[in-house]
Amino acid sequence: MSRVGKKPITIPKGVGVEQGGLCIKVSGPLGTLQMDCHPRIKVKIDGSAEKVVVENERPEVHQDRQLHGTTRALIANMVTGVSKGFEKKMEIYGTGCSVKEQGGKLVFQVGFCHPVQKPVPKGIKVTIEAGATRGDDVPAKFTISGIDKSLVGQFAADVRKIRPPEPYKGKGIRYAGEYVRRKVGKAFTSGAI
Image (tube, rainbow, N blue to C red; front, side, top):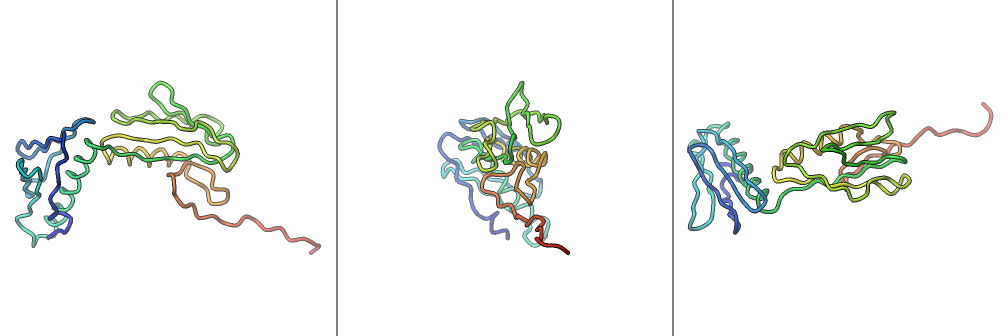
């Protein structure tokens, strides 16, 4: 049995979970999400106890155990997403680097000779706290938020991929709180050879 899969999902107030065949639909104050479950995994919605239970009828099959835990985690993420939402905080380090939102796109100045544009997907909201860096120590900050955890995470990863942090000065786009392993630069020796 999957330890994750056995845990029941508590449905918070204001969130509704509906099942139509293999389709699970979760609606809440922030929006609506839906997902198709695998036919080998059974999902039971207990309306009176306000819980969702995911069951695996064949725990001896390896793939069914994997699907059991994954299905439970995906449904739990949908419930959290429509009630609280998800967010990723991002930072840009480097002198002269900046970010701004323009016509549904994020426009980055991150050390290239041209600005880099990244279209913001539907269902994602970007909030810019500090649009430009001040020196090498004060970063530009922005937050990516939405109700779909996988969409928020994928968009944040795509944004980071534009200019990942380099190891010498740490310039580039990174997650807030991300540790960047630094390398020592060239050491010049004094005196004649």
